[in-house]
Length: 303
Image (cartoon, rainbow, N blue to C red; front, side, top):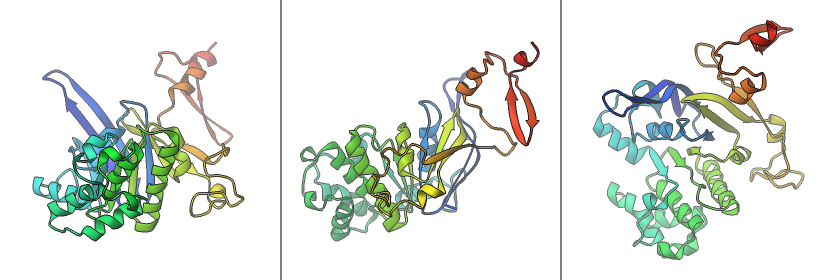
């Protein structure tokens, strides 16, 4: 297990009287070598979770283990080592990833220099892995937005992390470039075996992954899993064996499952509740019919 979150809570204190609960008892497990996505509306808690996984912030309560390390209780010194050795981070804003007056290869070399393990050849190899072997000496103003993001991915791999975290890595590029970037992640996942977690608002991301977790109101609400029959129809590069393009015109490739928390509770999507006209009520009638759990509007049943 690469990541294990149990009843994870994060509370931000605004002032002496007000608090915001960004994570409200989130449960999540990610296997070693898995590439998965995290989706959710703005304010759902997905970026907060990514900050917790990257040790950029500490949880308020619960359990959080990454690669065997307890991120709730590690010391400040251990936290610095974790961020340097275990995790690589890719931000949406390239200004946080890159130093503009350095070349592509110099940007990749920098983390190695800071760690004291400088290897120029390794930096070149990483740029080749992300398809930029021909741009190693280019300054950033000579690179497109998508190329800059691929440099950022190479930087995140400089110290051989076991976990890559990407926060909206395709949010500022067009659809074609986004596909290229996601293909880079998929190839790295397959070739290096590195675990990759990508936070995004793009629902189409699910077509590029076997598993996508949906976070709602600070909790894991549902998981979107690729159907095994569709998985069997894919080549290693993500194309369909019959020649169709991966992610195009295949509407029924995944299935979404609600996630039970440890108390047996699930989150019911608001649109489902609206469809049975529950209104502002917080009550539902739960019945078991022919082996199915059915949720009913009690007002309708009592008319």
